[in-house]
Amino acid sequence: MSVNLPATTDERALVVDTAHDLHPDHRDPQRQHVQQNLRSALLPLALIAFLVVALVAAAWTFLAALPPPG
Image (cartoon, rainbow, N blue to C red; front, side, top):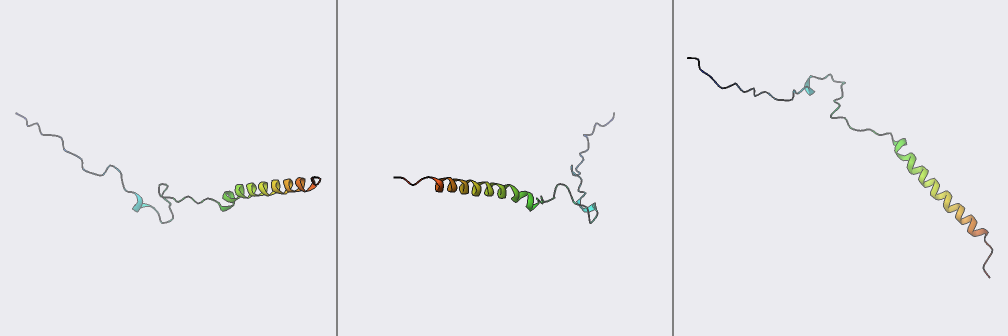
């Protein structure tokens, strides 16, 4: 009579740790920090500020050109 033993469990890790096997100049894609260009971050803010200043200057010019009341 043959013995029916339970299946052996594989207790190894599910994810292989390869971070220690990488080259020194390799950057792990899951651990990269986002480096956004400062120019591309400030350009929209500068355009909005310019438009606000231009609209205020235009409104001031038109209001100053109005005839005085009375």
